Amino acid sequence: MYCCHAFENLIKNAGKRGHAVLVGRLKGEIFFSLQMRALDFPDMGQASQLSKDTDIEYLTLTASMRIRYCPSCGTCLADIARANARSIKKLIPQHEPFQDNWGV
Image (cartoon, rainbow, N blue to C red; front, side, top):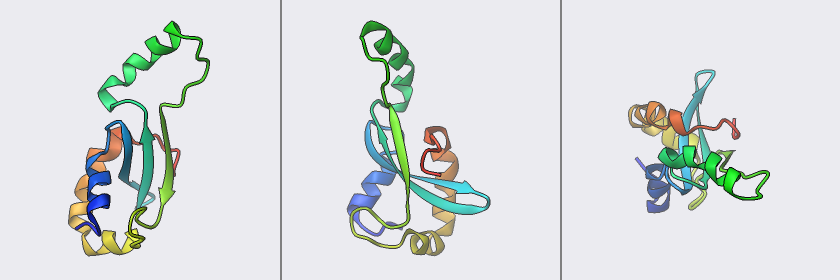
């Protein structure tokens, strides 16, 4: 299902601190986004306390950008989605809570 080991790791890192690739659906089309997350998803509630305890006025906790190619090996992600439609569609509801829609 994965084009390379790095892409597999990015998919499995969804919702965790660091970088991940998320799978989503918009207007019936499957899309992929590369996401950076400062905190694990369950720890996001602690961020409001962090901003109260410091002089930080703005803190980016997540950022995403839509991607069309694997960031590691360059494989076209639309080809992966077509070849593995059933497996990819199973990831969409799993990744939905982590989407910040920046990359849409």
